[in-house]
View 1 (cartoon, rainbow over the protein chains, first blue to last red):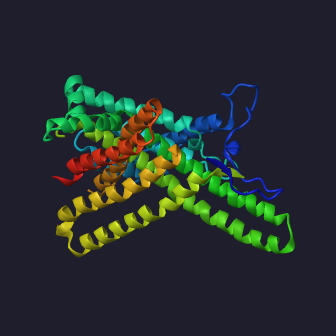
View 2: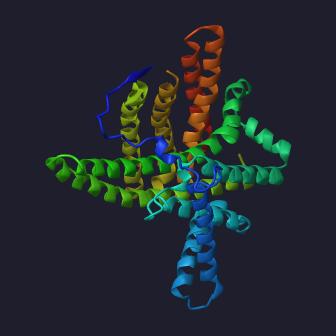
View 3: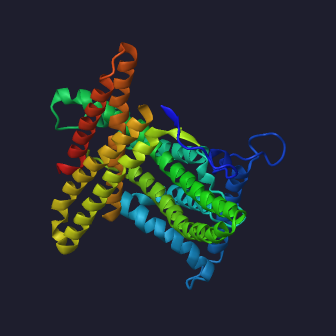
Length: 260
Length: 67
Length: 62
């Protein structure tokens, strides 16, 4: 079904998935590329920021302490307390780590000089999703026991028996395949598409700048759009970090709830 | 530039569900804003409408991959 | 309350997707091995029905 849609104009190469692959910084190992170092950098940034903001804790908070506490308070109030309920304190370290890690790694996408969202490589969202996946299944099994948990997934009450034949596979697939799949894919796809969008406008603007006189004028619009979309991307990146944490919290809350 | 026409078709097919979802939530928010106690009645209807509209979008997605 | 709503939207999409994947996948496999062409669409429709029914039970009935 693959067809040739249009022949590209000679000269301009549109950005593609190849722009997301990096050469190793030193040596030939695939473990030493830019995204890997950015993950380490994000861990250092997060640790340094929150340790310095919490070290000199005072009743009248300094500016640093206020910033750190407001991030923590946001995760605690809107995600932890409201979604999980009375037992939320046990999961706060997990939720808070996920939120800050995803947020900082997303924000690298619009940070000057770095300019690459780490989460647009599928491996990183997958590994965070595996953590969430293990946590909520472990909590379910611990809270309800293995067999009641499986029974709850497979046979929901209040349905005539033959309908189970149709519904049970869908329910099992939802819990074990679709949930982690959509969790990882949503974050990855948003970051990938966002970075591609910025690349298109920036590279297009640069190409227009090197062509004829009228096109030089047009490149202003292209760069303007790139700048506008950078602010738009900032919103998307914060929102994706929030949604990822929110859904993790919701799955944990579902594991802790007794009914349905 | 190469690609599949199926992707263009999927792009076109998302216009309808996108509009539908927007209209559903516009009506839902309007209703709840005018009469906050109607929320418990309106919410299941909004969810069902959202599910029906979204089903068409995902149908398009799956068909774009398979066909 | 608003955060719970948001979660419901995403889980609705999840249910729909898994209905399509499972029943559409079964239909596609049946097509592949039996050499027919209609079973994939039948499976897709069945997945739609199954996931809409599940959503109806989970979010609408109460």
